[in-house]
Length: 307
Ligand code: NAP
Image (cartoon, rainbow, N blue to C red; front, side, top):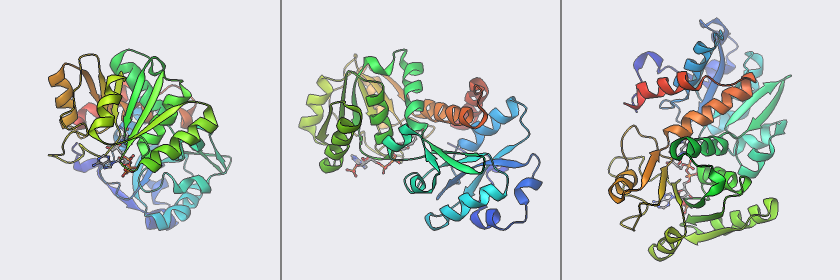
């Protein structure tokens, strides 16, 4: 994914805390941001700025490099700078939970926040990764998530947990999470069992368990980082995929991952994480503006950078 130089400006926590009103003086003024460390490669400014333009909203969305140590101060600075809210990416999604005045039920279950709305001077935390994933599956494969038996690779990680909780909220036929650290998987399965009443099966990330799980799954989701770097192997190694499998790789790198190639070779339907990125962004826009997001304008903006 390539970021054109004219939209690659990265502001800092100091810019935000400086009180020099640099964000209000921009044309149009910045009223939304993404906080992360690193943040330079975030694609969110493209989709959100395309949406703001399409809707004629006189505001822009900027990247701000915020380290873990600066998160609390930077959120407070948003209030002074008249922002509507922000998105959060690594490493802030978990830490932000304790800094909110209110957290949505879904974000609490997902244990992470990716969208903050500022309302009446208070921070409200949401997680749009899970709902964005469900919308992506519907769009890519034409079936509701609820109708599927799902296997989530890396299901107890950050994105994996949001996806696992979303599958539980949607009452999927069955949910299996594969994690190298089994204790993380079993702890999440227990939490979901207690909180939502769903039965989630946790397995270790080994060939024998994955082979069995594949036999009883319709949808296979990669929520591990495998595929982000060029030359990464498929998380499934050379395990057998069938024509009946749907394969969703949450990785979006503008290219093709080894898992997507494996799925194509097996005749399985497959899709990359770009659609999840699009829909989580659309849902964040809807939280900030309480109106439908201009999905097609957002999609077009992603096409330009996805190559
Ligand atoms: P994370 O919190 O670090 O979680 C990574 C998970 O993958 C953990 O469960 C980890 O298991 C597992 N894992 C790591 N390396 C592995 C390997 N070599 N083999 C098997 N399992 C491995 O990361 P994250 O932030 O959730 O990101 C995960 C993926 O989601 C990334 O590819 C990211 O691009 C994608 N993502 C996509 C979107 C989107 O909108 N499309 C949004 C967010 C994230 P252990 O606990 O055993 O280490």
